[in-house]
Image (cartoon, rainbow, N blue to C red):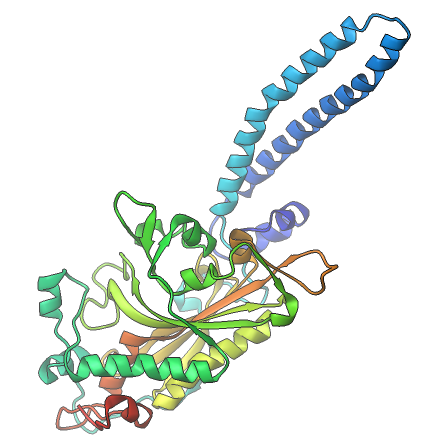
Length: 421
């Protein structure tokens, strides 16, 4: 949630930084509501102060034998006025809360301005784009020919934008998941196996609601949702807690299936594993001290990159411009893997710092010492990695002239010793 104090104390700066997202968020509505709230509270406090003063006068008047009826009548009138203000104060508070819940995070000062992905800035590349001395095939054709991907059966079972892994294809997906979890656990992340259903409060805490309600699978007649990412349960792991500052950073990782109703622009990436309504992902998550969070973002991004390096997959890292960033993000790096069938790099991970945006919604705070006032932590998360896209990248980049797929060396122990598909 947006920091209301930041908006009050630095209104012009907040408006300018939000403006880099390329949209007018009508902050004047906030200014009007906040002004009205202060006026109402001021009126109420003045009347309550008069009530308190009058209540102290009454015993003295009675002791002096004076008539207290006029003062009692005034107190009754004040009480009625105070009570009459309460519904309006509540209504203004609700409007303010709703406005702030719908306001995106402020982009960090290092985020480049821009309107869309064309304005993202490349930071670095690793590896060389894979070259072949034969005509390479897309992963959906290879998967079909090798009998490891079966979208037709998935459509029969469920519908479009679902797929089914078979045989060594299923084994490859599982091998990637286990390799990622083992790798990240060895780097100090605690592995979590969370629920894949979350209630509305948890979705709000992670910043998925109200912004992405149209993208979520809502379970009918309940207030439950299928999670779009393990980010949701991991964000709420320490919800409404005050942590000891000594435990920061908290580092968690989790594998979950993920569910998204709208997996991309209509008609885009409709074949293969790039945009599905259900897909597997290993997620990294951190709770950080605010002073260290941008260093933690760099290390989290490096942890995600290390998977691609161990798999030998070429990739690049871009920093997203303000207009292309997610609703809750203060700064985001996208990691994009080379996909020969596309002839370009394709997103396989987003690594983001949310600063206090999620922790304010979820009530996650810390204390340096027991004597300190609690402060909000910074939250960070990143895909490490999207598993289906990793499978697709392996299939395409490791394809051989005879139509087989070479297994990356680090995955061979997870594939029961198989060296190719």
